[in-house]
Length: 346
Image (cartoon, rainbow, N blue to C red; front, side):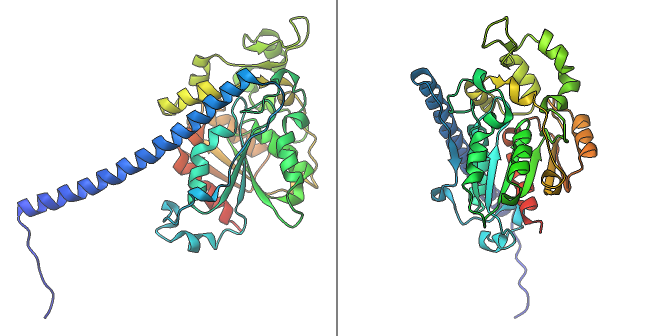
């Protein structure tokens, strides 16, 4: 009978627009409710961590993620409408090991974990020694090997015929580099997020030298140093005050996530970031490295990140606009898409 042409009155059009607005409103409310639920979970874990630290001594290690109960068969915004099973065909390695930066813990990846799990992947976040709910006294953590032990133990137990993707944030990049040197055959790709992607013979601290000054000056003059063995001995760690943390790390982050971080962050052991890394061309040099730049970062400026990339070129460089030093807070969707994109690279 040919094409039908339907005319709508202004009232009909208005009603239709109103219905669509209601649908959009419900969708947005659902997303906000889900994010609020995740935030409550993370805050609950943080408070539990704080209670544990008041009650117990000793060493604990925490891994979160890799739970199938929260995986859903959803269309991912990155996959242009394709269903998750089709999208996953391009990703052979699904295990992402997430390594936090200085002062943080496994808790800081709570948004990224949920997004990766919804895409059908297997993320695991690890607490380094003296971080998160690992209750080791940070003053006793003196070497990068000590600090990285939970990551090294994890890789030690990865079957010889399997590989994982390592993701390191900030000084967690040094732990990733250390792992690449010791377990190169178990790491498919390493992703550095505004991280200390150092060269052989460099210290993680050297990356921050432009912001914090020379190591010698920092050790002599910094007001944030901790002397766990007494003032007559070298400093053992440092911890920024809350206002400095907010300005350096969270200048683009939502207020409630900053509040979460203020509850959870712990002192930073000084020894591991002052240690020079020994990285060989045969192991670390042959690894597949990718770097994600955060373009509104006050702790590690975009210029410093560019310098890192120039001096130690990775296989690929990605950028997140408007992101501070904690991309899992301010731009979790952008980070999630980039991780998926890197995972698909042959």
